[in-house]
Amino acid sequence: MEKSITNHATYRFSQPLLTAGVFLLPALALLLPSGYSYGAVVLLIGAIAWAIEARTAAPAAPVPGLVRLLVAVMIAYALVWMGDAAWRGEGLREFDRPSRFLFAAFCLVALARSRVRVTALWAGIAVGGIGTGGFAVWQKIFEGAGRASGVMQTILYGNLSMLLGLMSLAGLLWAWHQNRRGGWMTAMGISAVGGITASLLSGTRGAWLAAVVAVGVGLWTAWRLGRARVYLIVAPLALAVMATAAYLAPQTGVAHRVDTATQELKDYFNGTDRRGSVAYRLEMWRGGLILFGQSPVIGHGENGYIAKLRALGDAGVIERPASRFTHAHNDWVNVLAKRGLVGAVILLGLYLVPAAWFWRSGHQAAGASAETLALSTAGLIFCLGFMATGFTQVNFNHNAGAMSYAFMTAVLVGLTRPSTGALRTAPRS
Image 1 (tube, helix red, strand yellow):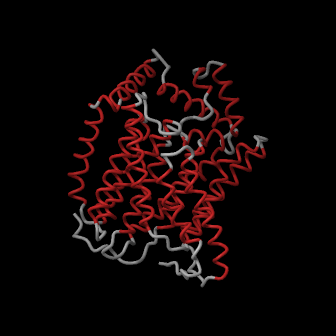
Image 2: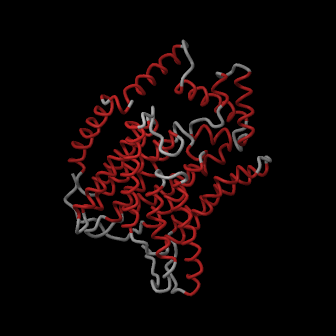
Image 3: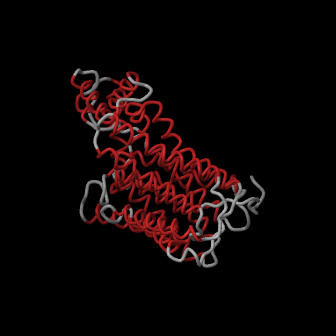
């Protein structure tokens, strides 16, 4: 497996900038207005400095094939989305979010060929998880907010908080192998509790799908460590305890959200009532699939989707209130209706190519250190968990969602450097 070889003296400006960006990205994303932008901007500046300094640096090994493929998919997503918007005359507004993937692809190349220490990432995740947990508790308990939302749209806040908390659980594996494990274990543990608590206090039901994904990823990690049997006993018990506590605690609002969703589903399929967030989602999905059937290859575009969905509502094909939303509250229905099968294939690549990289990296993790396995676990949780939350929300329709996924994926992939060999663990169960 290729390893990046760089002359550290040559990269005296870009290396600190990239390291700072890696830390700031998760640390500030949920704590400040547009907090996800600070780390991304620093990363981009660091990548530009790296490109300038690389002209006089010693040659580095080639970027691995899967990383090159991910760069190509990111570029394809940006160009297809922007090209489609230009072709349909949708204006410069639709260039903004997809352009972030071009910048993230550039940062990914720089990160993959530099040697940023993973400590910066775990420290940033710890700060972010602890911070968002405290922020959500303050909003919910002391400010009396109905749902914690941080400084962004509520559903997106709940999704990102959950992912931050779940990645902190992967950080416990890394922390366990540090010489001063006590401090790191405590920080990652509090961060995990903070991120998950913030998500629960936001009342975001779609984020719970990411927790289900994390359970599966955790089993894969336990198998790599030879602890699958123990995990199959402990993980379901811990999940049951957490779910029960969240349901019974009135402050979380989980019981109300579950009961409301259950009742809305019954009413919808009984035909007695098609109002409410769950019912409207089902109507939007139905309308989006109707539109996909009308233009299955390239879809209708942003403006075309909005206009045609409204027409379905006005004609009584779907509930009129559901036809007034600008996206389908489902990644796949949304992309099929707006970009057709072409867009769906590219979106699938955005999720599965980095997942394939993390899966391969975890299987090739070497040595007593679990650094690569921990990063691979966090990467799988992030990419597949983000994909799972997309079944009830279109995260990329928000600038925070597009930037968080694009740049965090670049960081996780760029910092994961697999090498040959096998983990030295107990026999697999």
